[in-house]
Amino acid sequence: MAVPKRKMSRSNTRHRRSQWKAAPVTLVACERCHEPKLQHIACPSCGTYNSRQVLEV
Amino acid sequence: MPKPAKGARLGGSAAHEKILLTNLARQLFEHGRITTTEAKARRLRPVAEKLITKAKKGDLHNRRLVLSVFNNRDDVYRLFSEIAPRYENRPGGYTRITKIGGRRGDNAPMAVIELVEALTVAQQATGEAEAATKRAVKEDTTKAKKADKADEAEVVEDAKSDKA
Image 1: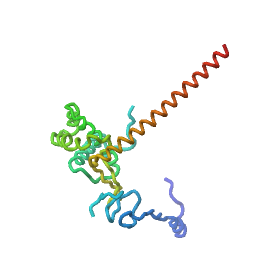
Image 2: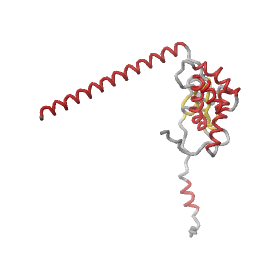
Image 3: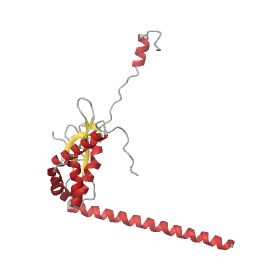
Image 4: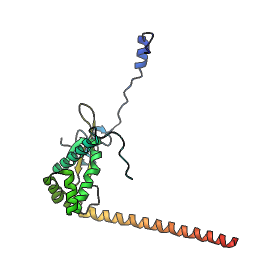
């Protein structure tokens, strides 16, 4: 079985991990309560979507 | 020929998926709205709408077809006597899916699927008007196409006669 010949240096490891980045989610303001929410999804704070009450709050 | 659905079955096997969708449909008709994962809601929608269409026809044959799905007379009775009359003048689109974001724990995209309310008189009128304009536009375009084709045919015939 193929195995690594050398231990990977801390520097290389850290360089690689420096590329792990979380992308920011795109949020929009809710039409009704103006809280930030995900697009195309019922507002988690007021429970409306398309000015229709979907979730109980 | 109908195209088979892509991807894995819900629940693992075809039999499990069938029974899962039946149970979801039963619960949708019982409660009017259910919260489930988006994938299940999207698969449930055609199943539930076809059952409602059968219930709208309302004859014995369709009743037996629905009974073969549910195996429970109470569910069939509810569908035929309470739900189907609400949609008498609605041409399909009996359910609504609204996404509600990720589930706590595994962040699975969840959705609410619900039976829509009956059409109001005003909505019905606008729907009929829109359908009428659509039909009119379609007829015009088909007529125009036919006329074009007829012209082309004449031209071809003329060319042939010239050669002769």
